[in-house]
Image (cartoon, rainbow, N blue to C red; front, side, top):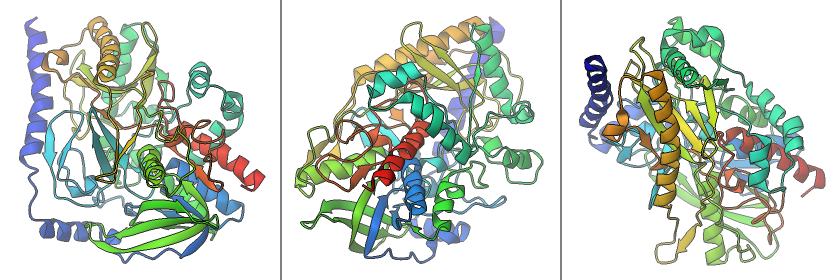
Length: 539
């Protein structure tokens, strides 16, 4: 008992002490000094921004999974397209610190904000800048989303897994044939992104001691961990381990980007291949504010050109024959809801803005059974599934920004929940928002916590983070889904009802959940399916 109490105190100190140090050392200095430092560290994002053409056959808003798929397949079909992305195009380098870390983050980490509270629930202060992670705050929920060329592929933790058929069918209600997804579109994305489970040499390396400890605990609790496919480039991790690259994925860095390109993100595949056709061009630093359909049928897009410092460089109105929305669940929903309320798209139906959910996200921490290693490698090695009460997955995770032994084992929980929210429009502020149910948040925490606590008990965990209130956090989601759901706001292939030539190609089309699994693979595969049908039909 004395040994257990000792480790309990040590584990808490490791987590809370590090977080407190982070907060204390992160008070922002004057903005000009920080901007000068960022210009020195990443001069590429300060280069003059090119202007997109005044008219394009197709405009794609956003550059994440759905948008990147769309841009490539349109280009391959001979359709010239313009990709508009509000964030910067960040480079990669094996030795430079392109991105900031979670431990002592600065403005490169966050999209024009001065405070951020992560999964540790401890606030941090940063200088405002056009960083890669946008935390959008709504009553009851903080939504993490990307602001960078490559979208979520730059800031996620790489796990890309298909849901079980029964959950997929339950959620999509027959609008999408799971068999076709399983035969054609999931494999297509897996091949493009070179998905694979963690190799044995990486799994057995020191930074992934926590992954091995996590698997050992769940086995003691009666579960069999399943290997998870990932888009990490394992050779880059091998380079880190061999000292041939600055540590990143092996040193608890991912949420704010991997400087050495450890993730095989969309800049290295779909977007690159699209641009190589000569028929697709990405324009960073272009925030889309308004979308509209003109009397003749073509679409107009009002954009603000932004420097990474936040300075406005100009505004323009662009036009296109066809408009593809890929700005993510929040971005796409905001554009559509505002367009409906202000009647720039007057024929949108009653389902626009509806069906939004968090994918049941919960961040969890339980005590380790012993302190056996040092390391918090990022890529998720494995996951377990439990439906003793409600279906949920726990995925082996890491402690963001803490690349040493903490006495804690982290998990990302994804609970199959049915609660949905609806976006609304405030005419006085011209803002779109939503409110998330605290009861639903509490329910998914209780379900995930019960499974995690059971594992800790059966595996003889040395500490109990529940007593500190740091064992579970569902006040955020990194997987926002819905707002323009397939088969409701759109037809079964993303064509928006009431406005021919307008399409939803991203997570806004997903009905609030992907069935206890990370949504990125499903978003990309749906985009592959939908754009194939649109190209075949010619509209």
